[in-house]
Amino acid sequence: MTHSAKHRRWLLPIAFMSATGLLLAGCSNGSSDSETGGGDAAADCADYEQYGTFDGDEVEVYATIVDVEADQLQQSWADFEDCTGITVKYNGDQEFETQINVRVEGGSPPDLAIIPQPGLLQRMIDTGKVVDPPQSVEDNVDKWWSESWKTYGSKDGKFYAAPLMASVKGWVWYSPADFTDRGVEPPKTLDELNSLTAELAKDNSSDTYRPWCVGFESGTATGWPGTDWIEDYVLRQQGPEVYDKWVAGEVKFDSDEIRQAFDSVGEIILDPVNVNGGFGDVKTINSTTFQDAGLAILDGNCSLHHQASFYEAQWPEGTKVAEDGDVWAFLLPNEEEGQGDAVTGGGEFVAAFSDSKATQALQTYLSSDLWANNRVKLGGVISANKGLDPNNAQSPIGKEAVRILQDDKTTFRFDASDLMPAAVGSASFWTGIVDWVNGESTDKVLQGIDATWP
Image 1: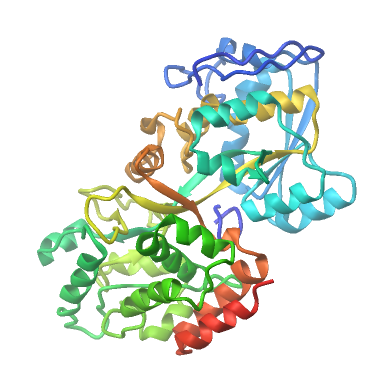
Image 2: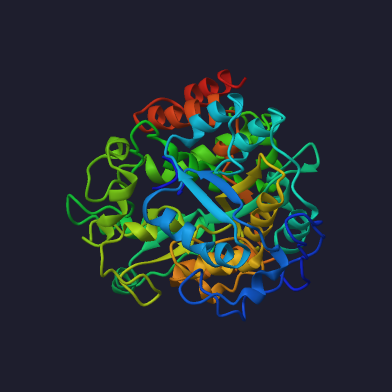
C-alpha cells in the first residue's frame, strides 16, 4: 500500500483571471466528454482556460503517495501545467504523517498537502496554518460530493479541504467458479452470510480448507484489518447515527451496540470451523499478512476473504477480476434485504497552506470533475466525485465502487479508526483486535480500549 499501513493508500465555468486577477466562484466544466487524458496527448487548453495563465509560478504538493501512483498523480496534472504555465513540484514522502507536523510547526509548510485522514486534517486546521480555500473549491464540493464528504473536510461547520480520491471497504472476495461448484450464491443479508458460512463449513473435507481466509498482520499496524470488520458491522447493524456517536466517543466500545458487532464478527472469525483456510488455526490470523490472506481462494483452501477494493491489486498477474472471472467480490450485506448499500471507506483531502493565485488555481482543478476523470482514466484509484464517469474506472470492481459511491441511496461513513483519537484508532483498537484473536475475552478487550480514550 503506498499511502500508509492502512491507506492506500463540473458544468458551469469557474473563471480565473490572470495571476493578478480575481478568482470568480462557480463550477468547472464537465470532463466526461473531454478527450484529454492527463498528458497522454496534446492538451485541449480550452478545458483549462478557466484556471488562468501564469508566468513560471511554482506550487509544491506534498503527500504520502509514492512509486507508480505518484507517477500517475503527476501525469494527472500534466495538461494543467502545460496550459496554465504553473509548475507543480510534487514531493511524495512515506513519513508524511510525521513530517507534515514538523514542516508546519517549523514554518515551512507546502503550498498544498494531500492529507489521508480526517483526523490529521483536523489537527492541521487546529494549527491555524491551513488557509481558507477559494469559493470555487467549495462550489465544486457542494456540486460534486455528498454532504458527508464535505463534513469530513470541515471543522466546526467551516469548510477547509476538498476530497480527492476514495476507497470502498467491506468487500467479500470469492471465486465465482467455486460458488458454482458448491451450488451457493452471494448472500443478500447478514443472516444469509452466516448461513453461507455454515454451508461452506460442511465441506471441511481436508485439513486446509475452511470457508474464510483472514489476515490481520501488517507490521506495526497489525490488527487494522480487524477494525474494518467491526466498523462494517457497526454501520450495518446500528446505522449511521450510532456509528457517528461511537466515533465521537459518545457510544463506548463496552456498550451493547458495539458488543453486538464484536459478537457477530467473532461468530465467524473466532470459530476454528470457519477459519483460517490454508494457513492454520484462529491465531494464525495475526501472523498472516492481509496481502497474502485472500490468495488462498485461488488455491481452493478457502472461499471468502473480507478486504477493501484496493485488494484487487494483490491478485497475481493474469487473474481475471470479474463476475465471470477467477475472482469477484460482493459488498458485505445489510441486516435486511432491499436497504441501500452501507459502506465504510477512506479518502484524501487537499488542504492549502498558501493563498497564492497559482495555489488556488491548482486547488480548484483538483476539486473538479475534470481532474477526477483525468486521474481515474490512468488506473489504480477511484473518486467519490459525482462528476466522474464510472466507465473511466479501469476495472470492473472500480466501476462498481464508483457506482456505489455515487448512489444517493448509499450510506457512506469514513473509516472509524481514522476518525477516532490516535490513542484509540491507530493504537488500542488495533492491539485490542490482536489480543481478541489471541483469546482475550471480549469484555477485557472492550474495556481496555475504552480506558485509552483521551
